[in-house]
Every structure is written in structure tokens, then in C-alpha cells.
Image (cartoon, rainbow, N blue to C red; front, top):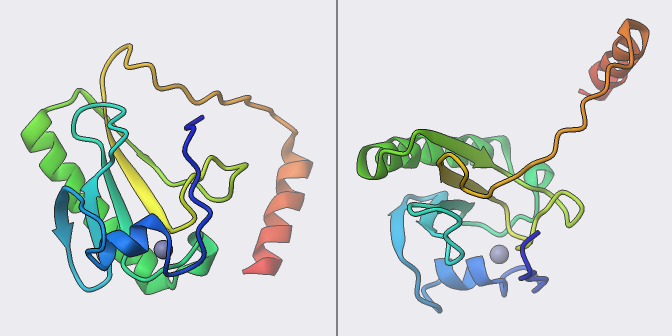
Length: 145
Ligand SMILES: [Zn+2]
């Protein structure tokens, strides 16, 4: 897990300060709802972060329009990463909450060029609880929509 964790209050976090041009960044793209900039941590060359311009902590705090705007910018950036760095793979990662791996409490998505043996790992402890449990989970989610 990353070592750096920014727990600054809304409007004072590093991405808000970056959006306000109070701190420097290697900006890639911006529009009225999003900013795309180089991650200072560069897991692989060409690693970009796409963040909402407005401070919102997690996916459940952004509006549907902001969520769509972030994905549109990520799509655009991913195509640029493919053209400029030509990685054999690409991963989008969007983490929520410290347990989810989020280190800056301002909604963002990673666009990460991938290479064989690049050291990135996400364990995926697959479980197969059975059809009845899956139906129950689906019913709970349908009720919550
Ligand atoms: Zn912020």
C-alpha cells in the first residue's frame, strides 16, 4: 500500500490545492469538471490521475455527472497514454476509503500503463457462495437502487 495518506479537510487537500493552482502539477488535461495530471508516485511511466475539480471524497459523494465526466476524461487520457507510451496493458483503479486503498480523500481514478512484471499486484480472493446467496445479494442491491 502507498505510504502517503492525505486526510486534509475539504478544500485544503492536495488535489483541491492543485486545482486552485496553489501547488504545481504536471497537468495533462482539464475541463470544467475534471483535472488529469501526472501521479508524483509514477508506478509506471505515464501514470495519470483523473480527479474531480470539486472536492468530493469518494464515489458515493460525486454526482452522476461528475462520475461520468471522470470516466470520459480517463477514457481520453487512456487513449493518449496508449499513443504516447504504448504499454501492452492498462489498468484503471478507483479506490474508496482507506480500507479500499484510497490515500487522498478527494475522488480520483488512476490510469496506469501496465507491463509484464511491473510489480503491481491486486490479490483477488475468489469465492463462489452459490446461486441462492447471489440471488440474495442481487435482491439487496435492487432494493437499494
Ligand atoms: Zn479536495
